[in-house]
Image (cartoon, rainbow, N blue to C red; front, side, top):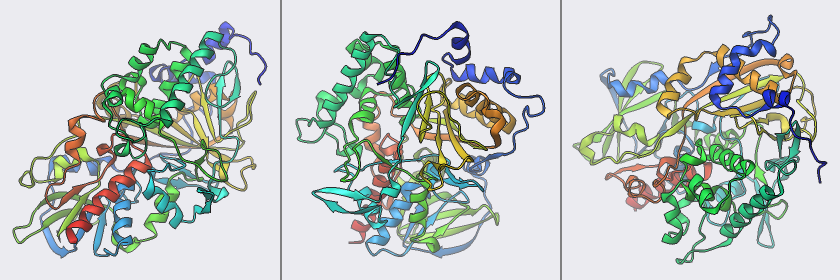
Length: 545
């Protein structure tokens, strides 16, 4: 299919060779090779994002005294996809007396989005795979939003405007761009065989059922088979699984590592084998008018879904509101003390039920010990850098044409997506590139501290240097770089977490306090966040009778 590519020269290897994040950061010091002196460290833009300082107020516990009191039947803490899904499900089933509290100035969590004069763009999650048979709540939402327009011969018919347009993916490898994300040329025949063996096993796993009759790997995670023959894969890392099969091909190892970072923000050596396989074997959705590998996406990514959910109950959302104390009410039910970030005042909300949909690790700061033993997640979340880069010209390059998702084999980043790819005007020259970099070279706590210490000049130059390696000369087309540092980007399903006792314990309610977050699934994807939100809402509805 492709012409044979010559091996890299020594010069090409020095320019395009594999980089760690540390190597890329080091390259910033030599960025004059790519930037003219007049443009060095002078990119327009800023660091945007959630106010971490406000969130960290929870650690101090120092808030003004409560001055007002109000009542509502159900309080939802956290306006990410889980919290919005709880609200959606409650409203959908006739429960209107609820209030959603969000710390940030906008809802959405890591599905937030932004825009400029060129395009809308994501600040995090940017696509949704076709939902499989177990993702019933996702399909219900998509039908409600008219993304699914009907059914033909048992397969959903999707609005084609929301299906990712071709070309979908390309990979920069050996000096040119290739179709897809798996290197297919310029590699030894023995390595090609390993590619086929791996992909063949993943396909087999996607169709197999366990002894309990359930599919081995599905979404939501909790609807997967719990056949011990396969859940024991959670006790080893994905790297150990590849070792056990003798799969040592560097290109295969790179691809698996890339995929683990894509969904989990962690390298294959740190991800459980069950989670690693789940990435490949759980996508079982289908469509009458698209291939099973298709995805749903929008210029603003999953921010489109967030906006549609928010539009259903805008008057029931209170932003810039931090819940810092959740206790039993002596008169029955619970009370939630909140801090108004804008007005700098505290108030109390009396409630019968509370759904805690904020990150679970934060609950230890706000849930009072008298409510019961609070199980903390025995996992960590990786910090990320997401940058939206506005350019005057669409980046091209030798080989396959510009795709929606563009990845370099030689970069520690996950590459970039083209925000205008879905727009009807996607052929115009100006566009926005959304660039993703998981900070995996150090322990999350260490990387998190360093990430917040670095300024806009640092991050913008780092991003420009990496893009320059993929597209020589692109720096001169950049008009702005805005960056968002996610301190806690996504939960990592480390070895032993998905099918261990800790995750089971976290799913338990504390009386009228219910929990909803992807930490309870171990996988930070839209489907899991929605599932946790719906499950918590169902508990509220059940207790109401």
